[in-house]
Image (cartoon, rainbow, N blue to C red):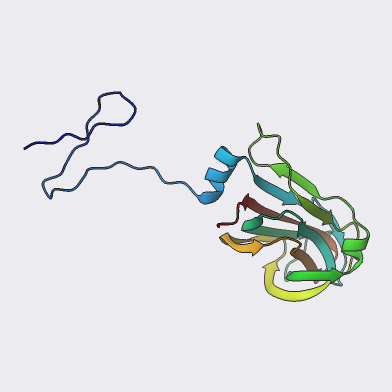
Length: 195
């Protein structure tokens, strides 16, 4: 007896079966962040813009998720350049979790937030601050360090595995070997907690 599997949309297309008796399929994959941006419209770019740096550690970007849903970080990008180009310089980046204090938080200078779906009207639910001067301080639990040669940038891919739950924080600071400018960018998305 022959059976034909037809599509559920009433177009009359039938499914093919291979010689190995397997259903022939054709799929398209995309990242979870891409799906969230297109379908749920809740993927965001959070950026410090340019922050003036000195040779001491200074806070560049602060993020606090105030939503009850998890904020999944897909990537962190940091970059820095010297005021006067010269060889042999680097920047030490630090990432902090559970930030409790520091002028980066108390000065509360608004960072840039953009929904990656430019047709969406949904907004990031949380606090986002940028450093204004090289003197911004950060107090929290050191989570990760990155060293860049100047000028230069690094991209840290997390693919949604770095998760900020409700009221959790992430801050990025930089300590360059010479004065200049730095910027940081975090991309992530909201996803409902699973029951």
